[in-house]
Image (cartoon, rainbow over all chains, first blue to last red; front, side, top):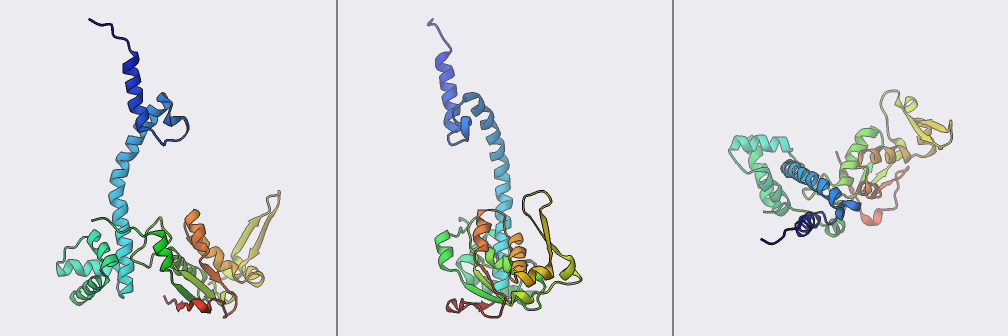
Length: 117
Length: 144
């Protein structure tokens, strides 16, 4: 049975943590104890961030759709209401993309929507 | 599908100029519309971390209106930094001294308080009279 000392294992563990804290502020990037603490915290932030991302994007799409609506003489709220009435199930992501990349199609939608509503 | 993200260079290249007459318009309502255009929230390409807004020229800034008794009661404060160094001016006094100031202050307060907001305010041009030196940019009338 070979003799086992703790050095190599500790070094490997420290290296694994410090690799993930690159770019952190001050000693947090290269001091193990600080790094470990903020690494765990960073996972918490990342977890929250993944949930917030969905809400943030939905908010952005709504702002963009509203801007495009107002260019076409209607509002976000009116467009959405009439789209639901007309049974058009395009989501906000697609609508926002249309507003940027295909304004003519978006215009047709607003007309269709206002005719239905 | 990736959500569209405006590029600063492209956003800058497509900036338009708008002109708005402040005569007899309520200060806050005017400022809110102007701030929207400066931020770019009127465009489908709006991106929060990029300045997608347009230029706005405000003319007749000295003739902007406040409702109620705010001409005398609305105070503008500043502090010199010394003890007892607070100075105040009413809306009417400020307009008499610097006709463009109320609109500048009101719009600035409605923009983001960060580096991007400070960049946005630079696209606002306020003039006391009906003339402005930006005819070369052929600004369009901003209506709301």
